[in-house]
Image (tube, rainbow, N blue to C red):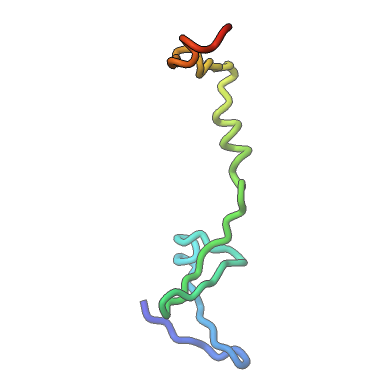
Amino acid sequence: MTVKLKKIGNSKGLIIPKKVLEMCGLNDEVTMTVEEGHIIISPIHEPRANWEKQFSNADSGKVDEVNLLENISNDFDETEWTW
């Protein structure tokens, strides 16, 4: 897709079509970086944005506790340690 840059004061801008914005998940604010002469425009991701939803989906209501040390043995525990 080819687009023309438009003069905006001393800068230039471009119009990003709505469909492209939706495909990329871009809203009112983005991050913009330059890498090897390319402009990279990315959506802003809030840290831990979906944690509440993920935790509620993971909660099955049952407690699943496992004793991780139950089946582990080594020479120290068997010969040198007094229980």
